[in-house]
Length: 117
Image (cartoon, rainbow, N blue to C red; front, side):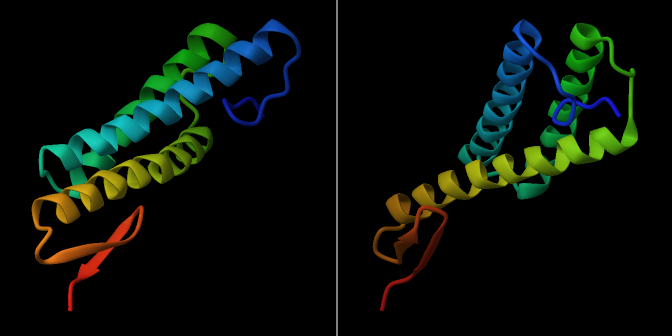
């Protein structure tokens, strides 16, 4: 099985693979933050995550001679990317709600808020 997160490499290919994984996670995080910053719904972040997953599939094919599209690897990539996109979305949305509506909400964690008493 040859996938972006599963394959075993040594040397320079391993470094490139790690950089691509970090780039994918960072892109998903930033996509989630961008959607939250524009006050759009979470569904748009999910759509962007599917597109980032396609981009990672292409990079895997182009750089490592993997399959053009492998559904099982794509699903794994998207699930992992969704974690980062959701975290970025919730982090930014919490910051927005607490700062813009400071008289209504207070931060309970980096990813959630609650109404003030």
